[in-house]
Length: 117
Length: 114
Image 1 (cartoon, rainbow over the protein chains, first blue to last red):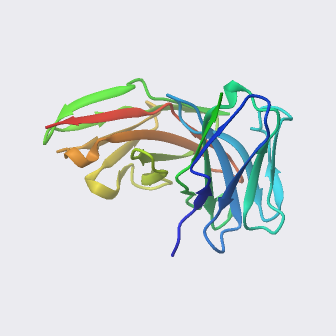
Image 2 (cartoon, each protein chain N blue to C red; image 1 turned 180 degrees about the vertical axis):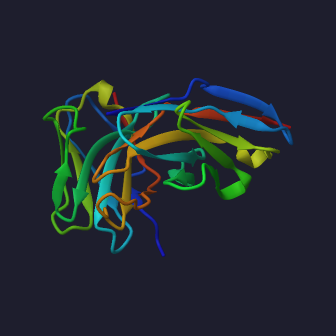
């Protein structure tokens, strides 16, 4: 089956503009995660959805960042008033869900490379 | 809270030579440990994981890692590398109880030299 897909693959925008990044998880996966990977760094957690609700948004850096998942499938990461420091690769991952103290593998998409000029 | 340290940002190694990529973690709770590989312009792919049981875990592409609780380490090894192993490798940790976010290290770039 299809894996996690993210669109666009590349996005170039100007400082101050608004951007939306889309993630299509693997069909049937209830958990969805967004990460940000800056140059030379590992992925940094942003937000986690279980179904339609944001179960953990503690990684969002400030109120310019927002994410939605209205139907429990596709998710959109929204960044307002972009700044040059927002330039990074934004990764999305999905998993079958969280089973309490158990483990469910996260499957990653290829990412969206955001460049803010 | 947990953290991961990958001291080596780059590791050059000749083809068919062995390699070890180092990972140390800190956590106040029991953990799950992971190694992911990222090829250029691709997403992360899980290489192997330690959840419980045997401390020596084997993964895909001939890689293995050993969980050492006393040294809080989870080093990745391969006895003979190939050109195709050239990629960036990330160690990651997750608390084992309830929902816990995954924390990644800064990555190690493995460069296999022909």
